[in-house]
Every structure is written in C-alpha cells, then in structure tokens.
Length: 83
Image (cartoon, rainbow, N blue to C red; front, side):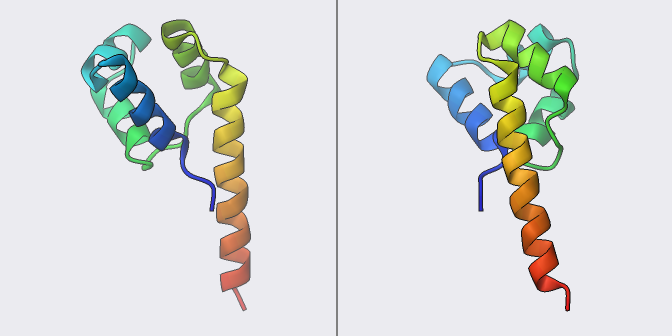
C-alpha cells in the first residue's frame, strides 16, 4: 500500500529541522491540521498542497499525487475486503 503523504511530510520536516508548529504557522493553519496530516488521520487537500508548495517549495501536484495514490490503494483494499 502507498504511504500516506503525511509520512513524506514528517520526513521533509525532519530533514529541514522544522517543527509542525512552525509549518502550521507558515501555512496559516492550526497545528492540529498539520499534526493530523502528518499522522495520516486527515487527507491532504488541494488548499494544503498549495500552502506546502508556498512554504516548502515542493510542487503541489506531487503532494496531491501522493494523496491520490494512497486513496486508490485504500479503495482497492476496501473493495477486496468486501464480499
């Protein structure tokens, strides 16, 4: 299964030495939003992808592609589990 984009975001923050609080402040969102994304408990929206692009310099399309791949794998797994 494809990893949630939050896993990549956590790694990116670690490489940059940036806290979730700092990222949230710079994105203009609550720390809870960033924390939920990083923990895979919230989808990464287009709005958040654009904010990440502005703050981190990474392409919003990449973030959305990661979310789409995760969603597809999840949907396929659910379909297989349904009789």
